[in-house]
Length: 309
Image (cartoon, rainbow, N blue to C red; front, side):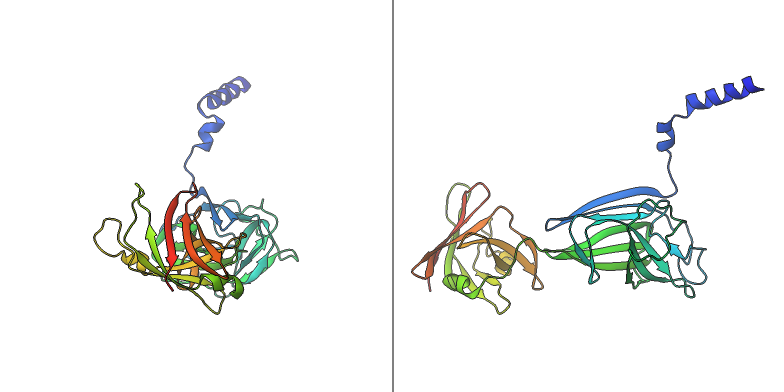
């Protein structure tokens, strides 16, 4: 009998190696992603359960849940970031955490999310409340577009943060995240004064040819931001004015060197992206600036301007 068992085990070893087991499709497949937001890197690791026809997913008539649920499956969902952040207005120190959602004992709807320092926890072993956890109330929407696989992702990002969302079935829970900006958008009034006024600007083409002149009005708002308002910028194909560029809300972000600025684009009065590698330099003369240049990361001239008033 022992010889037969040895033969069976040996045969299984030949047809089922560890790599074969790892390659098998799981009910809840692992997933991960990394997202950088202005120098703060986020990494998330989680397993993705399917709806599999279960309805409702939450509530008193839902399938049986653990009272404390990791928003994923199998092993606890993990979120890591190397700089301090604000999560729904609550300060969270840099580190690696497992995420857990506490369901209300009566409604069985998500009530709070908490950050747990221990990340090696199986999903059915939800941790008890402890002093080193960080708890935050949550609100769940029930009318989102259907998502068969549970999904975590950043729905939106800006220079100051983003929106991290959990979606599953028709449910969605969104979290506002703020990061420490690497650059300040504020320019002191004294430093902004030499730039203010109307400018005539031309763009430099690939062969060094100059575009027809456009207008740029530089002004400084009460919140300390220097804006560049454009008019008459031609389209690259010569078909007429460039509607996008002429309606652009450009912010000039001060760099450490006097007179140097980083161009950026703002939407809904929030800086969304910068022209990485580009610098706008104003040449101050006797307390004002009369000339301006924009150069790319290779120090090639792409734009030049002169003050007209």
